[in-house]
Length: 223
Image (tube, helix red, strand yellow):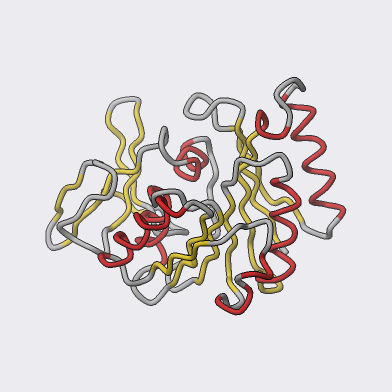
């Protein structure tokens, strides 16, 4: 097992294929049926790029995802917690994830997950209205958004202004077909770049996610 030198992700090369893992902070539990194995006293969880855009971005060449041990993260669009669980491993027991989702059934699953992982704080809320959960969230080191909405960039910028520390990093999973089902994704991505840079954010990396996620892009931005 080889640790990536700049964030809490581990890798193995098997033939031509590269596999990623996170070191589990909740040994004995899997989250979404992923493979789990032990090496010495540590337990590692395989990270599936077809189920996690952040994992796909790393395999697509992102050398840094700007999430560190002990970081506080605001995660918008948490769903049932697949990627959230790996970020939970990355930030460790002294880190914290505010996991926001608008679906009650999904949030219930996050509550169950938080019972295994004490660094996850589930929040039932609509990311369109960050003022509705402003009193429940502190300033964060990293903001991660994976929301399938036409106005996903506006949601991203609104939450950054309220919650992201100056000098912090923001990660946006851009779903081109959610913004416009007709336009060429490259045109959509160009418009997204312009919107973000107009607000004073610097795009430090961008990765298209094929073949794992079609018509998806992840942007890494510094505030």
